[in-house]
Image (cartoon, rainbow, N blue to C red; front, side, top):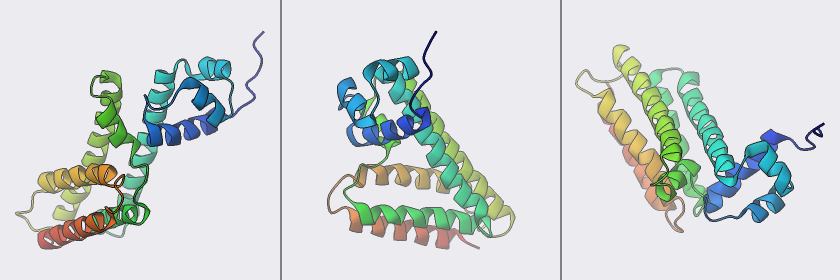
Length: 195
C-alpha cells in the first residue's frame, strides 16, 4: 500500500517554477531540486516523473498563471484600450527589478530549441496572450477607441514581441532605463492609434 504524500504538490511546483526560471532545465540537478524544494528525490520522481517532466509541468503552470494574470488585466479595465494600456504599463515594473530571473517562458524559448514539447507549451502561451491582446484591440476598434485604419493584428504582434523581449532584457543589469523607455514608446504607439 502506497503511503500518502507528505508534501503539497502545488507548492513544490511553485518552487520548481522559480528554480527553473532562475537556472533553466539544464542548470540545476535533481539533488539540488530535491534539496531546494524540501522533498526527497524518490518523492519527486513519484510525483512528477523525471526532471524534464517536472520542468514541463512547471513551464505549463507558469504560462497558465502569467497569461491568466495578463488577460485579467485586460478584462478588469473600464475599456478595452485602457486594459491594453494597463497591461503595457505593468511591464514597466520589470525595470525596477533588473537584473531579475526574467521570464520562464523566455528561458524556455532560449534554452530548449531542440525540445518540441517545451516549445509547444511556450507557443501556446505566446499565442494565447497575443490572441487576448488582439481581441481587446478589435473590441477597442469596434467601440471607436482605435482609429479605423489601425491594425489590431499588427499592434498585438508588436506588443507580444516586446513583452517577451522584456523577459530577456530584464536579466541584464542596467536594462531598467531601456525597458522604461520601451514601455513609454509602446504607450505612445497606442496613443497614436487611438481615435
